[in-house]
Length: 112
Length: 114
Image (cartoon, rainbow over all chains, first blue to last red; front, side, top):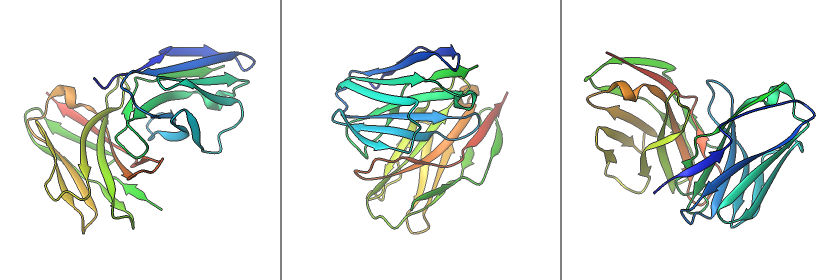
């Protein structure tokens, strides 16, 4: 089973709202990733967690705040977003860093 | 730095025919993985096939196979007996063994024509 789940599927939020994206996997993977993908572009890496510790923050603005409360769960907290943050947000996991990444279905975010 | 190049922004193929998508990469690493991911309009990124650089044998998954030319740094994907469900954006990707990053190409949009 290589399933990564993400909720919600769609999210519309105003620039003053606070919301969270959730990602879950039960494959025992110890590396988890957040990507941002604009239309017709490849995914861009945002954050990497390895064994529940933040490994990489690709200079992402502080209005995006990741959290890894346990080995199965990864959250992305959103606050004071801008319209240009509208995108597809993908979560992925892998057995460990550098191994095959398996992606979730994504959350389509629209910031008004 | 690693780069991945997909020179075909769009391609089309008749149903049941064979199509090859091109990918080249640049790296000084000796241990790495190469991947092809498929992203249909439903938007989920699906792993199609994976190749370990140390393996000389080309990877195969049912109708999907790769032509891995390590010296030429080329990694093409062949889809045989194309099906309508193969219509998608295809991304070639590179990962150094043990590294954080997955480097993606810009993608090839494949349309299978009935």
